[in-house]
Length: 582
Image (tube, rainbow, N blue to C red; front, side, top):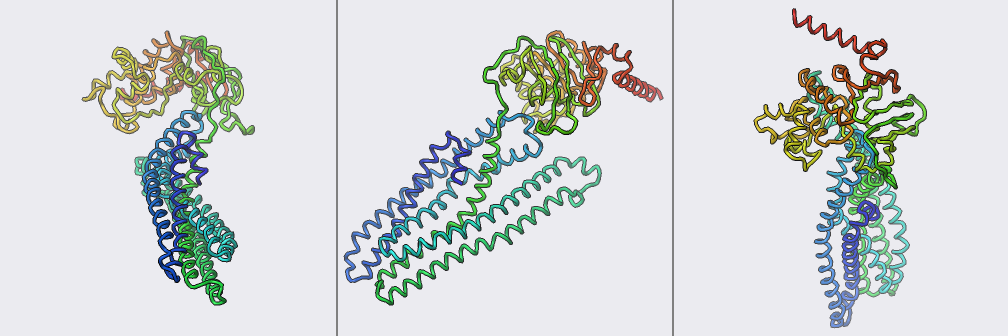
C-alpha cells in the first residue's frame, strides 16, 4: 500500500511522506522497546532485589516519553500530510485530465474520474493520519518485541519465529480473499451510483413514460447487485478475519503451555515467566491489531490502485519539435478513422476522406445522422488522432502542432452545450478573460446573445446555474456561440450550432456566419440546409465517405443526396405554410 501511495503522490508529495514515515517508524520501535523493558522491570520487582528496578524503570520512562513526543508529532504530521496529499492528488488529476485525449473520457470513465477526484481522494487523504500509524505500529512493534525476546529467552523467541510464517500465511490468505471481495463490491457500488445518477438526471423522460423507481430495471438490478456484493463480503470475509484471530490466540496458548512446562522443569523462574507472559500479551495484541488495520489498508490500496491506473494512462502524444501553421487552411488527406484503432474489422467511421477548407471561406458539411460529421470536427481539433491519413492545418500535420498553438487556431461550437455555474459574462469570457467591452459586445451581437441580455433582468450578471440549467436551450446555445466567437480563432467549427435556435435567430446567425467567412475558415455542420445555402462549398458525407461536393446550385442540379434533402425541406416548408393558412 505504501508503494501505491508513493506512486500516486509522485516526487512532489514524497518528501513530506518520508518525514511522516520516519516519525511513525521511530514511534513504533520505541513502543516495542518500552514494552520489552517491562520484562526486566517486572523481573526486578518480583525478584529478590526490588531496588535493582530503578535503572530499568528510568530507561522505561525515557522510552515512554520519547515515544509520546514522536507519536504526537506523527499524529499532527499525519493530518498535515493528508491535507497536502489531497492538494497534490487533485493537482495531478487535473494535469492528467488535460493531457489525456478527449476520446478517453467515455461516460463510464468520466463518472469514475469524478468519484476518484471526490470521494476516493478524501479516503486517501485520511490514510496518513488514520491508517499508516496503526499499520506501522502493528508491524514494527511486534518485530521489535520478537527481537527483544532473544535477550530474555531464546526458546520463546525461536517459537515466535517458527509461528510467524504461519500467521503471515493466514493473514495473506484472508487479505487476498477480502481484496477480491472489496474490488467486486467497489464495482457494484460504482455501478449503482451511476444508475442513481442516471435516474435522477433523467426524471423528465422517466416520468413522461410513467417509469417509477420500482419500474426502472437498470436501477433495481444495480441495487440488488450491490446488496449481493455486501452479503458476499460478510459471508466470505468473516471466516478469514476469525481465522487470523484464532491463530494468534493459539500461538499465545502454545507459548503459555511451553512457559509453564519450562517453569516446571526449573529452567524458567517465576518472575521471568510472568514478565514474558506480559510481553507476549502485548505482542499478541499488537499482531491482532494488524488484522484491524489491514481492512482499512486494503480498501485504501484498492483506491490507490484505481488512482494510479488513471494517472498512469498514456497522455496524448505531443510533438518533440512543434511546428507553426503558415495559414488557416484545413486539409484532410486519405483520412480513415476507427474508434478502436486496434480493431481492423468492421466499417470505419471515416473511410479515405479527402477534402480541403481554403482559408477565409465557408464550407458546409451535411449528411444523415451517424455519417461521421462530428468526427471530422473532432479530428480538426485533434480530440482524437486519425487511424490512417493526415489532417493538416496551414500545411502542418496537427500531430506536429503544440497543443496550446492548436487550441489557439481552432474554436468549436457543439450542439451539446455545457455552461459552468456562474454568470453569462463569466461563461463567455472563459474564451478570452482579457477581452475588452467592445470585443464582448461584438461577440454578443454576432451570436444574438445581445437580445438575450436585454431580456434578462440581471443582464450579463445573470447566473446560469450548473450546466446552464437556468437558461433555455436556445439561450445556452447563444452563450456557447458567443464564447467561441470571442476566442477569435482563425478556424471556426460549428457543429449543429443553430439546432436550438428558432427560425428568426437562425436567420440572423446565418447572416453573421456569412460575414465571418470573410475573415475565418468556417466549417458548418448542419441538418438545416437554410444555414448552408451560401457556403463556398458543400460536402455531403454518407457512411463515412464524401459522396458529393460543390455549391448549393450545383448539388441541387446534380439530383443526388443533397438534392433529395433540399426537396424534402421544400415540401416540409410548404406543408407548414398550408397549415398556417388553414
